[in-house]
Image (cartoon, rainbow, N blue to C red; front, side):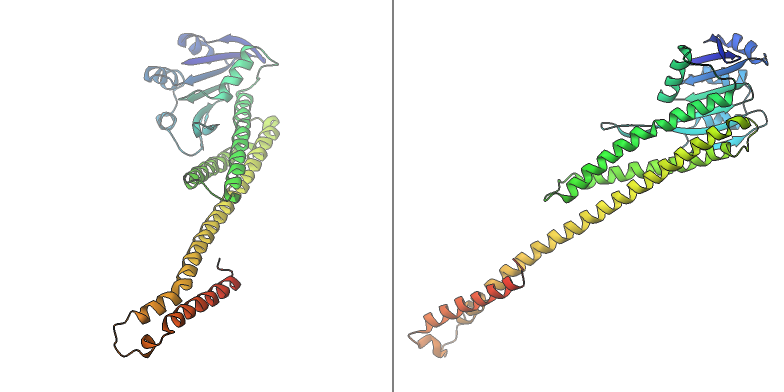
Length: 323
């Protein structure tokens, strides 16, 4: 699906034009053009990226091929960026959506395979004419990236809730059998989040430093603020990850302690029954010449010795707190 906006002096003057009309708009130096491609067909990709804007084949290849990491590349007439939006639900878990951007002096082209809340929100705002429109494509890029970063906040809140649940399970007397797999899944979510946030911060940091000619100096403070927000998100994610690892260590120590308690209990049972086994083994030997067998008090002596030695063993293990 192709969605397009045409702006002039901060006002929307056209929307969703045909490709031929977009070609005419592209040739007008006084107009700002934004074209959004959402899950486009091969024909739409060729018509927009190749025939309309004539992007470099390598940039088009990077755009249509999924990339696991954000990146930024400078071309002569435009800037190509790969960013990632995030989504998180308790049912679908952690998910990312790639957003590719081609930023020129008077145009912006965005590409994504699945719907993105940041893009949908900005399209709705522009469609309702809520506030002044953008006066440059770099302003559109900032708005998109700002909305994209804002969507990380609910993700961190959801992951924080999962951390709270994990802490409760770790401190509970009994842990469910599914706890380890759940903990590993949350760890995978945090690892994936950190792998995305840091490179994305580096991409925005390059824009915030003013290294690109496609970012006006008046917008540099806004991109620096965006970079700082991503830095805080990264630090929060690192803190949550360390807390998760601490919970995992507590769980392993708790499991080891419970296993040791079981071993101690079984050892205590074995130690308590040791006197009875010793006496029974002694008198179970088939020797004819055992004087105590002919004693009238032999049975009472054996029983008394067994009980007394067992009681001594119980008292000793009780003092050692083995049970």
